[in-house]
Image (cartoon, rainbow, N blue to C red; front, side, top):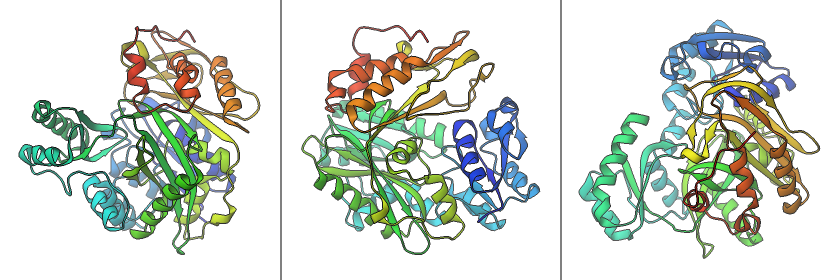
Length: 457
């Protein structure tokens, strides 16, 4: 096992990774921008290195600064968390060239799966079900029109280099396609530096189901079950649940088996998430593969009792997984709600500000992953996530009640700061959510109703 690991990230995920490292006896190195000088992980880690100004491109996305910090501190490995450089094959290649272990898949596999069009083709060849769409990146608007006519409207345009719910546009009729193509391409270029797009059929009233997979260098592949991530705004998740409610055991087994087959087909090593769209007729299709730890990984940990970060580190060190498929025995139900510093009444616009009060829920089977504290400033430079509230209960009804109680215990205050706590509780109370009949269109339907005020935490 490694003696020193640098965590190339910030916020709650940096602190979460550091905690597992400490349990394993691994020395940790945090990196921080000027804006994060007083971050919780800076205080927690064994050592912290300043890597640049607040702008991500000059700090958390600046590969030379991070590599230099790793070399100066004798770090044998770098854990990238999620976001930032976690799915950057160039970063993984530089780590490899400098003799530093990247905690994740090989640069080759990451490059293949990071290109969503290439990943579609690879998985189709491996026999996984993929949505009808373009076989490769679109060559232009004419190709987009031809493909859309072939698969039928509605369709969704996606950035080849996309991720995190960004770089996507749903198009419901032919008249809007050319305009959407130009806008999505410009958006992809601005966010990812890559304006290539591909197109798929868009499934109405769908559910978003994903499978957590682990694979080591010794040929062992294990899935940890599936999660439902259908509660989304702008294709970004707000609430996640494990296991996905309402799936038959046969359907559950089939989806998980396809994820394992996909990981083995490309020789994946590490933790991966295979994301599927589930139709109202219970047909499922692969959407994409994430080559990193997911924000919502705690719900899987809660029902399986498996520390996914620990397994990531073991695999990266060349050790076998500590579990076999027969060891995975999910119990109960877990929910995660992302508490963001956003105003639901203003299309979830971020609301930066300083926290004058920040009190967390507690009680049995409640886990809160957060980096925030009273006096912490939620700045405009990074994402708006304040805390991940995770609960476990023996059944779904108790899990829903526990989550509502936990959210109700939050006390968050700050000048100009609003949060999503009230909106999340509203989702939990919706009849379609309680009956597990919700789809990815739930939040859009709610925001189209009578405007609501932000919560009063």
